[in-house]
Length: 140
Image (cartoon, rainbow, N blue to C red):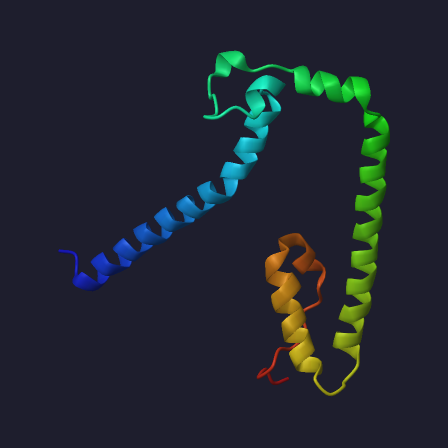
């Protein structure tokens, strides 16, 4: 027999999972919308109501981009900007991590905890680059 506490816990897990799936779908709708619009012909793109007929998909938008734009140049610019910003972020984060780990100064614990909360949990892989230093309330 399942106790009331176990039922409540299972119901909480189901509600959490449903909420997480709903949130994921909410955030994925714009991504699917962009993909859908990329394959629409220009005359159907701004029509109302939107036409979701997959038989009217076309590649004219992609053809126009490659005919009128300098795509290799755009790709190289994106690569340069992404690489530069990543290197600057790693450099600045390593300098901040060293200062927070090595030196003792007023407010270091609070800065460290704030830095870990901001970058450690929000950016995933970038958080692995942040050295683990003590948070407020932790004794050595």
